Amino acid sequence: MNQFVDLTGRKILITGASSGIGKQTAMTLNGLGADVILVARREERLKAVLSELEGENNAYYVSDLSEVNRIEHLFKQIAEEQGKLDGMVYAAGIAIYTPLKLFKPDKIQEVFNINYFGFIESVRQICKKGRYNEGMRIVGVSSVASMRGDKARLAYSGSKAAMDASVRCIATEVYDKGICINTVAPAMTETEMYLEFMKTNGMSSPKNRGTLERQYMGVGKPEDIANAIAFLISPAARFITGITLPVDGGMTTS
Ligand SMILES: NC(=O)c1ccc[n+]([C@@H]2O[C@H](COP(=O)([O-])OP(=O)(O)OC[C@H]3O[C@@H](n4cnc5c(N)ncnc54)[C@H](OP(=O)(O)O)[C@@H]3O)[C@@H](O)[C@H]2O)c1
Image (cartoon, rainbow, N blue to C red; front, side):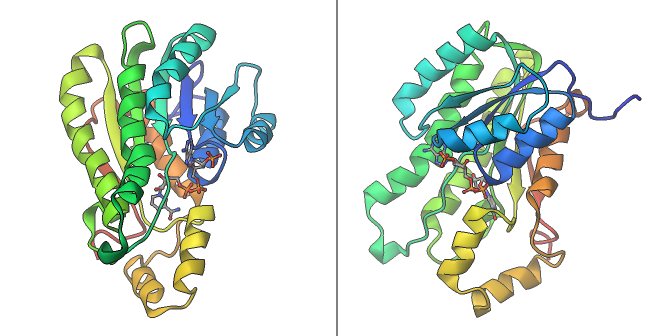
């Protein structure tokens, strides 16, 4: 059958693949034919995801991507062991919510290290000559928080807005190498990060109720985000670059 989104024979690296959106993206892309390379810190989780995948050419690498200076070594090793890549999904990220008056510079640094600097350094490394095939696609997982003002989210929202802004710029530098780069911006999606957020705020707090009213299609599932990523990472999206695609159950426009 001729599939619209066909990833057969494509090798795609996915960070944050031990859980939530990254894990589901690994399963979805593998289901569409891709060999996937999983990256995160928790090895047992990565092994468990690997065991659920089809095919013999999938792999995992244990790495803390907030240690930005070590990313170069990781990508060198992956290039040597896995060859050229056809795509990268950067889904690794953390959410720390603290109001301005309680914020310390090292907390902002912690959020930016994994959410933003780790992303940019990974993009820089994968775009090096000899590490990718013509037509490579990169998708960063941003957030609707990049476009909204919410209490206590200054670092998280800032890190996601920085991703989106940088993607617009990087797209103009890499298109002539045949590379497209975009972000997706999920709204609340049912993962461990979301459950933690709900626990902290109180499941039925007015704040959470208000957010869900605006997200009128309800809480997203990791599959909803993974499906949008699958399209953007596929050859079918060859004319799309530098954008942020909300995947948000109506949140951004309501
Ligand atoms: N869930 C939502 O409602 C929502 C909404 C908008 C955007 N997002 C974004 O979606 C992305 C995925 O989040 P999620 O909801 O799927 O949360 P999650 O289930 O907590 O997954 C986060 C992933 O990031 C990895 N990670 C965190 N710190 C890392 C580090 N220092 N080095 C390497 N990997 C690291 C984690 O793996 P290890 O702990 O094994 O390292 C895990 O695989 C995040 O960027 C988040 O901001 C989520």
